[in-house]
Amino acid sequence: MAGRGSAGGQGSTVRDAVVELLRGLGMTTVFGNPGSTEIPFLGEWPNSLRYVLGLQEASVVAMADGYARASGRAAFCNLHSAAGVGHALGNVFTAHRNNAPLVITAGQQARELLPLQPFLGATDAAQFPKPYVKWSAEPARAADVPAAVAQAWRVAMQRPRGPAFVSIPVDDWARPASGPSSPRPALSDPAPDPAALVEMAAALAASRRPVLVLGPEVDEEGAGPAAVALAERLNAPAWASPFASRLCFPEDHRLFAGHLAASPDAVTEALVGHDLVLVLGAPVFTFHVAGHCALFDGAAPLWHLTTDAEAAARAPVGRGVPGSLRLGLPALLPLLPPAHGRIDPAPRHRPPAPSAADPLPAAFVLSRLAARLPPGAAVVEEAPSHRPAMHAHLPLREWGSFFTMASGGLGYSLPAAVGVALARAEAGNAARVVCLIGDGSLMYSVQALWTAAQHRLPLSVIVLNNRGYGAMRAFSRVMGTHSVPGIELPGLDFTAIARGHGCAAERVERPGALDDALARALASDGPALLDVAVDAAVPRLYREAGEDAR
Image 1 (cartoon, one colour):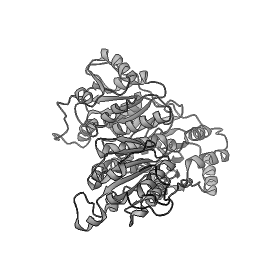
Image 2 (cartoon, one colour):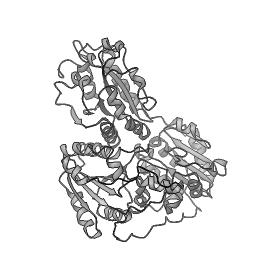
Image 3 (cartoon, helix red, strand yellow):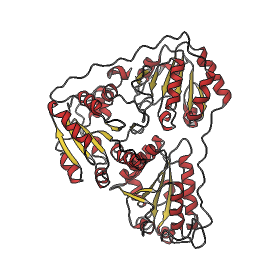
């Protein structure tokens, strides 16, 4: 069926037109979990498209998200009916917060059955994933499905990027398409107002102690080298924004100041004393605890450059300049004089190398992983209680080498690591992908191991196993609450689970065995899981967490 006709041409079915459209748009990898409402789309699957099967819809969306973020292209994701969309919604929310360009389709019951509220039917299907999709539709006519998919792609790729959704009744696929749905280029990125950049440059030139706060848009737009050049021109410290979901600045650079914690007090303490704050590619600011941010009292002017005009408008203070960092930073640099007379920022505090102990401290495990991380490796992280230790002992340096979730919802990073590995392999990059994950996080989407095994991906899953939800332990202490149920996770055998999904696996509990076990996990032919038993001591968060929580 797939090879007949051209997109929207005479005699072309909706299915023919959509398949040709996917080829033309470069969405030739389809992530899905199939059901009866998708069979007409999936039948006689063409060799020109690759189908990546996930065993649960939340994993499917996260795989597509990781693939899209690593490749820079929209990914196509096919879900099964309203139930499948419901399973996936947590990671749809995460894709929205990650600015991941996804085209998500879901099967719908036959049009003639919809008035009867049929089995598997979705009531008002286009509303179901809102507000966490940029655009959604269930086309009024079957013939309009290809055009709706094309529009979803254009909307998903327009900055700020994100997911878009199309509901497709099961009987639409075999019906005639209407008119051509030829691929059109994505909309170009908007450039910042040149006059606003001139004003920004004048304010920066007049400041004596400027500071930069950089967010995930820097890496997302490929603006990293320009951001480094800006920091060097200003001789200004560069902080990573709170809960940044990508690398914001090379963490071994002399101007890198650390990671801002998601606390108003911590942000104030880190940035106070500077006479200008420039936020690039991040909100102003992402907080996790309540409190007063003294920066909002206007002690220092704040400038804000971001592709997200809504985020710029939402900022409580400062001068927002919406527009692309990729275009804006190279235009800003020539407007700035050299940083004569500015004092070098104080160097970032570097904690001493952690010592081995029994039980294993997470910081020691991370320092040993840093020493053995292969060149060009990417890290996909979901170990929130160990994030301060990761920031301190696993410095990241290369653009495109770090991904995590911006939403705070667990169950993202293991399947996202699968998507990252697929995208890198497709681009000819055989470097290792390391999923650094907590034991609680692993269980949300553990079935993604099966997909990794089926594709023999170069994926190492390092489980920091503290036998419970470590972040919950920490927040219980911060909030002064005791005897909270549901925090401990006894009786889970992660090596058995991994082997049951087709992955190599081992467990390590003693310092002397750690280096060799890491070496095996990082050199495995295909995916491997290493379950590392770490100290279950309550981690420190925010202001308690040392240098990175200032």
